[in-house]
Length: 216
Image (cartoon, rainbow, N blue to C red; front, top):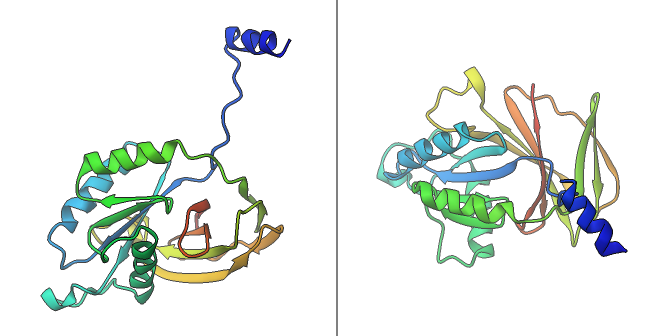
């Protein structure tokens, strides 16, 4: 009987889609103004982002190439710490630019479009972690189940007219909102000067469980 019903649903074109995260795919670019390959990475991600509406690209500026030129004014200590976390997670020999990370699950050089598209294709097959961020008025409710401890991050970035750089959404500030074990949590909608996002991620810079973009 079950097989018959399933066949009827197929014949009618009715399929229950698999559950995927409702938020955008988080694409993180680690870059520096003193990195020769980074301008091409900026152009590559802008081109890919322009063709899709399911991405949030954040640019994290690092300072370890400052000895090659002027000090990068956008570099943050948090950028270097975050990239070190991914370096350990992906068992890389060391950090590099321009590195891109996709939902904390895939990584590749960001200056090659076919690398970027291949990483995004692999991410498409990842199932939802059953984590939800839902906004109601001035409150955001976080709920779901997590396999282990997770971190809640608030990331501020430049967007729109406020972004006068050649980068996509350069990060300006990072705040840790606290650990999370899967219990329902209510957060106040942050006051974003330009753009910001809430990122729920497995502790230790693991997979990104959910992302919500907050518009000012």
